[in-house]
Structure formats: structure tokens, C-alpha cells
Amino acid sequence: MKILEIKNLKKSFDSLEVLRDVSLEVNEGQVVAVIGPSGSGKSTLLRCATFLETIDSGELVYLGEKAATTGPEGKAVYAHPANLRRIRRYVGLVFQNFNLFPHFSVIKNVTDALITVQKKDREEALAIGRELLAKMGLSDKEHAYPYQLSGGQQQRVSIARALALRPKILFFDEPTSALDPELTGEILKVIRQLAAEKMTMVIVTHEMGFARDVADHVIFLNEGVIVEEGPPAAVLDNPQNERTKAFLNRFEH
Amino acid sequence: MAFSLLVMKLAEGLLVAMAIFALTLLFSLPLGLLVAFGRMSKNFLLRNLIKFYISIMRGTPLVLQLMLVYFGPYYLFRIPLGHGYRFIATIIGFSLNYAAYFAEIYRGGILSMPVGQYEAAQVLGYNKTQTFVRIIFPQVVRRILPAVTNEVITLVKDTSLAFAISVGEMFTTAKAIAAAQSNMLPFVVAGVFYYICNIVVAFAMEAVEKRLSYYQ
Ligand SMILES: Nc1ncnc2c1ncn2[C@@H]1O[C@H](COP(=O)(O)OP(=O)(O)OP(=O)(O)O)[C@@H](O)[C@H]1O
Ligand SMILES: [Mg+2]
Image 1 (tube, rainbow over the protein chains, first blue to last red):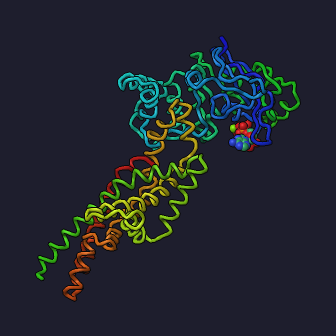
Image 2 (cartoon, chains in turn purple, blue; image 1 turned 180 degrees about the vertical axis):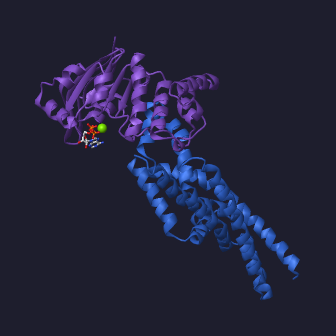
Image 3 (cartoon, each protein chain N blue to C red; image 1 turned 120 degrees about the horizontal axis):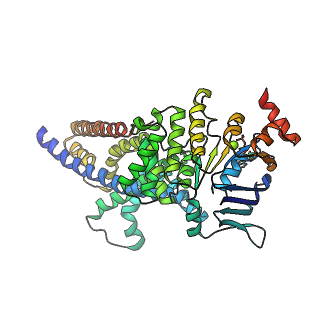
């Protein structure tokens, strides 16, 4: 089943064309890695897909439900608010810098949306939260506050927070970039585990080895265009496009 | 006048001052938040109207504002002023004035919040109200507390301005007694009372700050 379809997505900031006709599909259980140079539009793509930015034109379809389509005037038209609210629930996002709620304890960070947004009762939310914290190896941090945790622990809390809402697809924007090198491993391990459980994910990353490992599909974005995509072995180890080659070369040294 | 009688009279005035203080906070703190929203509104007219209101409140003396609120209804509409209106006018004047100051404090606090907090809440499905009430406002309170403390301490002293429309608060009383007896002891005692009040206020605010500093 197709979880996400993006067709001909265009996005500009004023006169700066950041995404120029991007199309991609993500199937259930697939892990897609998005790579590309700084400023190529990776974050913008994720932000458009997670409704943090509105697209200028193109289609955004989740599980066959149209979140945005191109209207008669060529401009994107979003679904009715009620439909959009439902579609938004399919989507989770893990930020580069976590964006945890500093005034909430770890368990509250994970459960508050369950209670406030999804109207689950406390006990049920707590059970879900505790299970996820256990999975993230953070059971002993339940009552800690984010400032008391290492970057890696904070990022695991933010992954648990996103997972608590049971998204159909989880986006990661450079989940390890804000971490000290020795802490990236624990996050990559968690994502690997999620991949093994067939969680559908789209991951922007600079960790080429990790992309090779965990992704089924790699997309190379350059200046707002997907210039090359395919299985990691093809894109990362045997790139065809000159841009891709030049980009990957920089990582080998 | 015996010292104990003096203290009694001033204490009566102090009660009035405390009532002004408490009621002003009660009204101006929520009103200030509304004003802050108006000040940040997308609506051009509302935003600029509020901006003008704030600049008037901050740019003219509070004493003058009190006079206007008190005498305004009579001079403008010939509405006779009942005796009880003095106190009400004081509360209205103080609340309008302090709301303007609090609004700017709220606004600064709200604008200082990192956009990531809003984005995280949005992706998790919080609506605008939930985001503000659960995520933004509690953090704003923590951030603005020191600035609010400053205003609250100023307010204790500002209650003395109610003498301008002859509300019988402590300073008015002290002035009357001092004039009658050509003695400055009433001012000294009133000063001690104001000072004690502010020590209590500072202590209370510090306790609140401590309570809220369970996170960084
Ligand atoms: N809100 C915005 N307003 C204006 N320009 C923006 C905005 N967000 C992004 N841009 C611009 O869009 C381009 C793409 O940015 P984006 O953050 O998507 O790149 P990226 O591929 O994620 O880069 P990096 O690897 O550095 O994170 C950049 O030139 C950036 O300056
Ligand atoms: Mg980025």
C-alpha cells in the first residue's frame, strides 16, 4: 500500500525556488533516505510533507487521501480542515533539535498529546508511554526533565513522543546532527529497530553508512530536484549522475 | 495623637492600599494578556489601536490617568459622581494602566518562545488553543516572572497615587495627619509599611520563581 505520494511538488520562498517539481512515493514498511547537499531543500521537503509549510503546487496524498491537490489555477488547494486534521494524524516528525517540551517531564512529553489531542484516558496514555520509554531504554528517566538528559536520550524521548500517536509514517530530519558523534549510534540503533518492525520512515541524513544499512530507497536531492534515486547499492555505491558522484565523493574523504 | 492611634489609622489606609493592589492585579494580569493578543493581532486596525492605547498608558502619568477616569464621566457626560466611584475609578485607572505594562511583558515573553515549540505541538496535533495553554503560556510565565515582579513591586508603591483623587489609602491618610500635626512621623511609618509590603511581595515572588524553576 502507498502511504505517501508526492506529485510535482513545488515550493518557493519569495523568489527562491526551493523545491522544483519533486515527486516521490513511499510504500508501507519502506524506509526512504533523503540525502543531498546543504540548502538542497531536504528540510523543506519534510516540512511540506508534515504540513509545517504549505506547498505552492502539486499533490500530497496520504493513504490515498488527498491532503493537497493542484487546483484549476495551478495553485495547491488543501483538503477541508476536518479531513486535513484526520490526515495529519498519519504523520509524525522527529526534529533535528528534538523540540521537546522543557516544562514537561519525560513521561508527560510522551503522553500529553495522547491525553490532550487524542482524548485517551490517563491510565491508557501512561501505559502506552511507559511501553515506549521501555523500548527506548529510558524507563528510569520517566520523571526526569529534558534538561537532565543527554542529547541522545532527548532524541529518544522525542522519537517516543512521535511514536505514541501511532503515525502511519515517521519523518526524521537529520536526527543525529545535533548530537555528539559518540551519541549518534544509539539513535541509529533505535531507527534500525523501527525499520526491522516495518515502520514506514523517511529519513534525511548525512550518515551515508547508515543510509546504506537501513534504507530500501535512497533519494538524492540537489537544488530542489531529485536527480537520482534507487536502492542504496545503486545510488550510493554506483551513482550515475555527476552531481551525485561529486556529493558522495566528499563523504569518502 | 498617640503613636498607636497613628498606626491604627495608617493600617486602615494600608488595607485600602492592599485592596487597590490586589484588585489591580486581579484585573490587569488577564486584561494584559488580552491586550498582548490584540497587540500581536493580524488585524491592522486592532493592532494599531492597541499599540496606541499602550503608548498612551505608558507615555502619560498614571496620576493624570486616574484623574481622567475619575472626573471624565462628569466633565464629558455630566454624570454625577457617587462617593463610591472614587475607589472604582482607582481600580479602573490602575487596571488599564498596568494592563498596558503587563501586555508588553507578555508580548516579549511570547515572542521569545522558539518556533520549534509551536512546530512540535502542531505536528503532534495540538490545536492553537491547546498549544498556547499547554505548551507556550506555562513557559512564558516562567520567562516573564522577573519582569512581572518588578511591576508588582512598583504597584505597591504606586497605590499611593490614589491620593490624587482622595481615596483614603495609606499615603492620603499619612499626608492628612502630617499636615494636621505638622509632624513627619506619619510619613516615616507609612514608608515602613510600604517597605514591609514589598519585602513580603519580593519574598512571595521569589517563592513562585523557585517553584517554577523545576526545569531549565
Ligand atoms: N522559511 C524560509 N524562508 C526563506 N528561505 C528559506 C526558508 N526555509 C528554507 N529556506 C531556504 O531554502 C533553501 C533550502 O533549505 P532547506 O533547509 O530545505 O535545505 P536543506 O537541504 O535541509 O539543508 P541542510 O542540509 O543545511 O539542512 C535554503 O536556501 C534556505 O535558505
Ligand atoms: Mg535541513
